[in-house]
Length: 316
Image 1 (cartoon, rainbow, N blue to C red):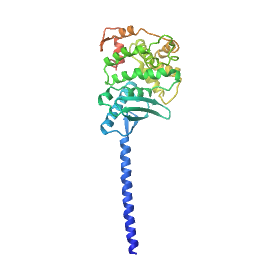
Image 2 (spheres, rainbow, N blue to C red):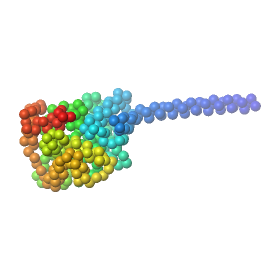
Image 3 (cartoon, helix red, strand yellow):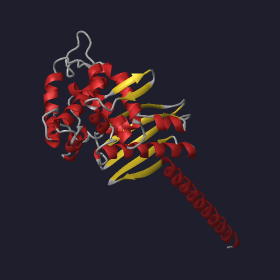
Image 4 (cartoon, rainbow, N blue to C red):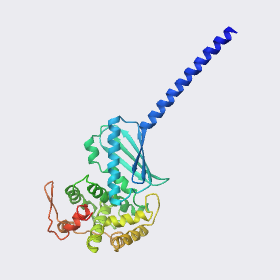
């Protein structure tokens, strides 16, 4: 009996120890999970953010701030976050800077993006990638031949949204446009945007379509409306990345929201045929010039008010 009692006491202590170990392990696992995920809220939207692997606390906070800034900029432009819920996976790798990102809408809105472990606070502040991917959330998925509208919108809206949120100066975004927009012009042998799918025509050709549309809407509405009104109308009609629409439906809804037939008319010109607007004249009309690396504005130019409205410095 004495031996049995001793055995029972030993067994009880062993079980208690096992339970303490199990509880400690469970607590550690819960703490690790908490560090690997965070939930952000932007207006009525929820962002579930995950880290792989879990970064140091200082890098983790830099990433949270970076994503929060991007979400704020996109919300300023669209007057709402594009989707009610999005999952963002941040994958860390060796090196420095923000690397490739990808947005998708299949089985819910999702963004995957790679970040170097050595990325600095200044690099996060200057990064455009996560804002670009968030803009993708705000337009319906369209057939592959129209991929230029998806990438063109993200290329054009990203800096405009960041400028309106106060994260970029007008000088910076207009200078970048002057330096880069020419890449969207058709080259010899190119066809319309639906048929020439080079990098330049897809990203900057699509961005050029958006710029021309923005200017045309503002000219026709005496600067009361712009491209953002068309895009907000599409989004409010349910046109997010989570749905598939034909392009003509998106353009019709956008034109109805803007109150003018610009998106459809411009697509009829640029979709099947190469269109090469005079960019030098466009910059002159908008009052944008470059002196070396410096951007200079001419506020007496005929479309100077349009330029200011696009960056949100007037009328917003």
